[in-house]
Image 1 (cartoon, rainbow, N blue to C red):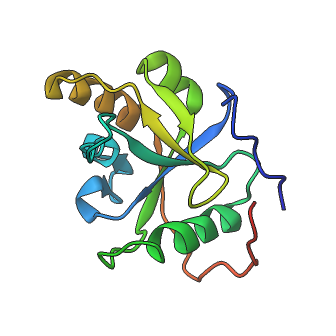
Image 2 (image 1 turned 180 degrees about the vertical axis):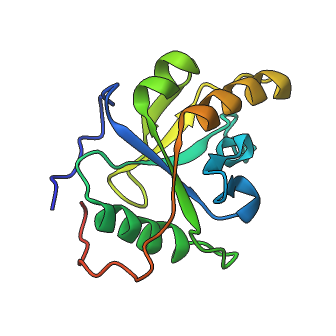
Image 3 (image 1 turned 90 degrees about the horizontal axis):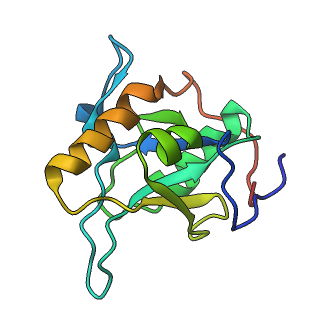
Length: 153
């Protein structure tokens, strides 16, 4: 089991995972991720910061990544949506290519983070979402559930 990541200093070579809970966010036949998968949440007052929830999964094996998705995304959702797939992208794509920031946000898990610094314009947001989608790798869950136990990988 990998050591927990520090809450500061996202490295450009880190793997960042966006868990996908809606079928419209990906196409498993073409292995494409939709730009909408990276759409930032509208901020809830008093916050004014648009964010996209992701996980820092560098150093985790596949079973550990899927287990994080099950325990900290599927089981924590109030709407009952499940993790259906994931989009893996290099932090460098987020930081350099898209010009966004990754802010560690260790709740509900030490590896949780938010993509921030989204522009206000929806058109400009879509440009950045396209970059992330084009550079991400679609990963489908294994046919069986992962079995390792999880503390705070």
